Image 1: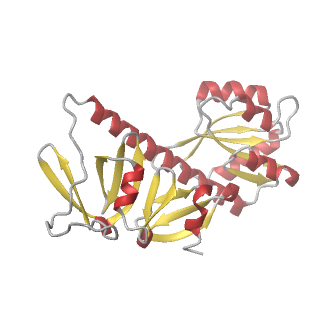
Image 2 (image 1 turned 180 degrees about the horizontal axis):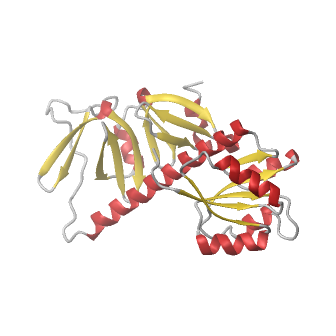
Length: 271
């Protein structure tokens, strides 16, 4: 659940359209409207000054249209963009511009609700990435940072052959060893030079590369779905398509993870 207010900017050259969108967004308590703009140039200035989380951006505007606004901000930290227009021929171009979603005027309540769900998911993913980055920076800032390593399996008899995979990971942190049951791992993500292992509501950190980690895990159970993410297939609750031909996996814990287009072969396991 997202407690953070989603700071939202509305951009449309039609006052009635702006007012209509404001009214439709009122039921969403986490959406905080920080202002509105009537043209593209004003929107660019406002986005740079206010740094909103989300922008509802009309495509057809005199002067700078919605696409021109995105192009002008392309090399900067972009907010999430939801395009809106009365003409559906812009849909393909909207997604090619990497918009989070696309709404056709007059805006349908169900489609708006769907778009807000995508926003919440994207915001939560961004928060998770930022938290992981802060955690890694904290580790690096320590005078004597802990050494994390992948140990052999606890049982000395397990001199693993090429077809055996580890059942446990033993993570050493300043003299204390934590034993992590691999079967309980939900997903693993890369964060800088470290890996974050998510299992049973806890996050364990160790120094390891994605490539080496993948070699230690049974590919029948663990699959890479993104260049920085490995998931436990047994923990998958659902799979759903999202914008731009991509997919999103929801784990049994409720965690939502994106599936990269480069790993579409993994999707075939669930279809």
